[in-house]
Image 1 (spheres, rainbow, N blue to C red):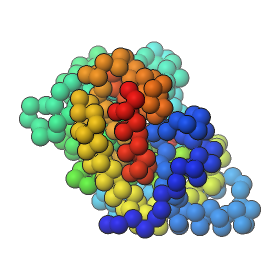
Image 2 (image 1 turned 180 degrees about the horizontal axis):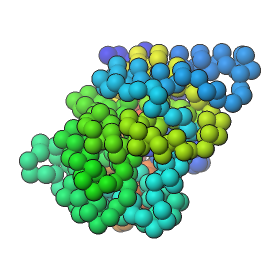
Image 3 (image 1 turned 45 degrees about the horizontal axis):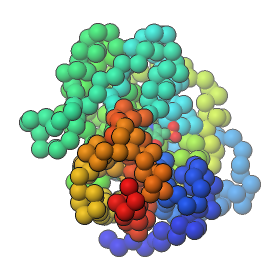
Image 4 (image 1 turned 30 degrees about the vertical axis):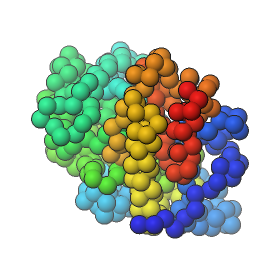
Length: 386
Ligand SMILES: Cc1ncc(COP(=O)(O)O)c(C=O)c1O
């Protein structure tokens, strides 16, 4: 597929006032925070323009539009038939997970995460006063697998669950590796959750961005065990680049977890962005063509990145992402120390995320949701100056 939209040039992107473009001075090329450089999907822009024209900037309303849009999208995209009655609106995934955790855990209860993982997972656990337990992904590929990278360490998770964990934060797809968990791992995880009584909070924010060759499996779709113990956090904020608009949903598919979500403050809806709900409904209902173009660009960018690394930094190791716009690059052999992102920023003026913040010194995370020219410039600059 050839792209029909133009990726704005860097000069225009630098006029954006969002975190990615407002954190660094002009001479730094930012491939950091999880925003994409693409123009807004046309139906989303139209819905927002209409709202502004109506001066429709009040509170989010308790309509079923968002729940219906989520249910339709999930069915159409993943064959997952969820009940709109189990869809609860909150402002963002962070708030959704923290507020859900508050209702599940008592101070000091163990909550498990699998590093390297999105850094705020550990913040969220600490925010609710729980005890953080880290069960890293497997170091090496599993022998029986054809996937060349790390996976969930199910044996180690079982041990942590058996030792009394109360909840597990699943990142699916897994940021920063772009790992798409296979169905059998999710089924096994759900079995463990049921055996040991552990809630699974599945952060599925990157799910719309699963790339060609991989299949996203929604956690709540895998089994009754998963439905009994699981919560899904879904959002259009990564897929359609709407993070600043603040609308997310928590999905439950069984009475037990729904009881906890029902106890969230009724005010949660009013804390959600009204424009975010409008944009999300437009994205989910009318945003498939745009998403298909983005997935195509991301697919080509991940191939380009592999070629650029092979050519300019052959010692760097990077397992191509199965999802999203994030590349997790092992730079340990280059001798750039624990924080290669700091070295790259200082010498090549390219900003990446520091791997040690996700639990892996010597690694860096690169955002390839950008023009191929930007990606090429970033890697050639790194190769030239570092
Ligand atoms: C896995 C994951 N979860 C959550 C978030 C943040 O989501 P929100 O802004 O909805 O809290 C991100 C942002 O990059 C992410 O990668």
